[in-house]
Image 1 (tube, rainbow, N blue to C red):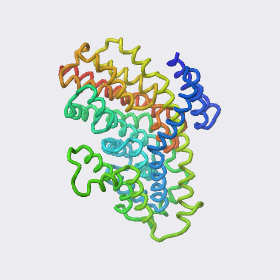
Image 2: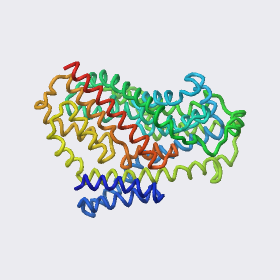
Image 3: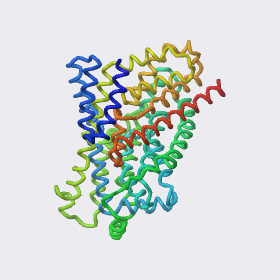
Image 4: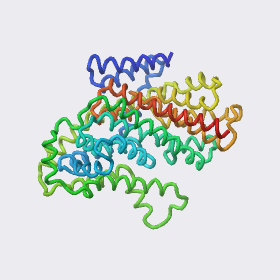
Length: 442
C-alpha cells in the first residue's frame, strides 16, 4: 500500500502544482504530511521527519544556495557573467553551450556535490545561453545530467565509495570502469539535452534584453576576474576532497585548507570576490532594494521549495518504503540488472541517490555469492549497476530536482517532462553499459 500511496502522492503533486497552480511549497508539505498519515507513521515520527527533512536539507545546502545566488547577482549585474560567457563561447562554439555545460558538470561533480555544482555554475549557464540565443532548458539539463553522472558512478563521490565499501569492491576497479560508463551515459545525456530538452524554450534571463546585456558589458570586469568567484570555491572544495583522501593529515596548513575547502566557507570567499567586481563601490549594491536585496528575495522561494522537498524525502525514508521495495525486488532473478532495478526503485521512492546506493548495497551484500558476483570485476560492476539505478528517477522527493527546476525557471510539469525523463535516460544508458561489460568481461 505504501508504494501505491507514493504513486498517488506524485500524481497529486503534478496535478496541484500545474493544473491548479498551487505553490509547490504548500503542495510538497501537504502531500508529505498526508503520505505520512496514510502510511501508518506515528505522529511523533512524522514531526521528527518534518524537522529533520527541512532542517537537514537546508542545513546542508541552504547557505550554499544563498551565497551562490548572491555571486550570480553580482556576476550578472556587473556584466562579468556575460564577459565570461563571451570567452567560453569562443572556445566551444556559439551553439554548443549544452556540450560545454555537460562536460563542466561531469568534471566538477567528482569532488563537488551536485547541488553545489549546479548553484555555482548556474550564473555562467544562464549567461552562455543568453549570449548564444538558445533556450536555458537544454543547457540546464545537460549541466544537471553531467553532475548526476559522476555523482552516482565515479569515486570519490560519497555514494559509490560507500557502496564499494559495503560490497568489498576495489575502488580502483570501480573508478577504472566507472569513468567510461559515466562518459557514455553523459554523452547520451547531452544528445538528449539537444534533441529533447532544448526544444522547450525557457528564457535564460527574462528580465534582461540583449541590448541591456551589451550595455552592461561596456564596463564589465575582465573574464579572468569574473571567473574567480566561481573557480576559487571549486578549486578549494576539490583540494579539500583530495586531502580528505590522504592518510597523513598532519602537515602544516592542513586544518586551514580543510576549513577553506568546506563548501560554505568556499562560497563565502567566492561571494567576497564577487563584491570586488563592480568598478566602484555603491551603497545600493548591498541595500535591501539593491542587488543584494533582490538576490535574497530571489532565493527565498528556492529555499522554501527545496526544504519542503527534503521533508517529503525524509518522510518517505522513515516510512520504511525502502525495506518494502527491497523485500519485493530482491526475489527477482535478473543477474547484474537486479542491483540497478532495486536501486532505481529505492531512489524513485525516497529521493536520495546516496541513500539508494547505500541501502541497495546493504540489501545485495548477503546475496553476492548466490548471484555469482564474487570476482573483483563483478563486484565493481555491481557498484556501477547500483550507481546507475540511483540516478533513476529524480523527481519531487529529490531536493536536487527543485534546485534544477527553480534555478532554471522550469515549472513542475516541465521538470518532470525533461529533467526526470533525462535522469531515466542517463541511468538506463549507464545500466546498459554495465550489462555489456558484464557479458564481455565475465
